[in-house]
Image (cartoon, rainbow, N blue to C red; front, side, top):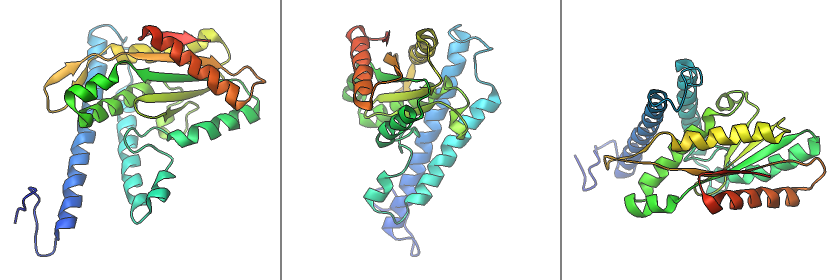
Length: 256
């Protein structure tokens, strides 16, 4: 029997079970759309010479990103069964993007400072993203954020999506992200990574699900290198200032 919400019910399948299954299928379809759109963006960039064939991820690398993202999603769903909201919030990964959660960012920076080794950080913020939610709705905006996170991971060193990499990306609230880059000690190196991140966002359109629309989004990127003797608070203030500087013009990189 189909209920008023379009979900199938049987004698052994009460409405709440049908709802869970229906929502699970919608989530899976959403995940498939996001990953297919991301793969299409790679082809688009190669065809438009925004990405060279050498820079493009190999089929094996692309499959690893997708497979690992789906595996992390399934593990998260399994691990959250029966847990309280507080317990679920302790999950290492952000459920929408698969990036590390915001609350783990500062502890990781404190760890890097305590180690005393060179590192840098990038803050990113999608430009005029609020217009996407206003025009197409929050569900569409969420899918754009998820695809942006996949693009962000393209340039991370060490294939961080398979838990072996050096770089760590965090969702820093809304459409903002932060990337910790161990071993980066020169502005030239940091600028190269930041500029690639910027280009990854603007060089291919984002598909708006169920609207048959494509939009271009840009990103502002601010970055700093740890000085070697500053504390957490001063470091975070400088990083925030760098992002503010980038957002004054938008679609630019500001390195301090």
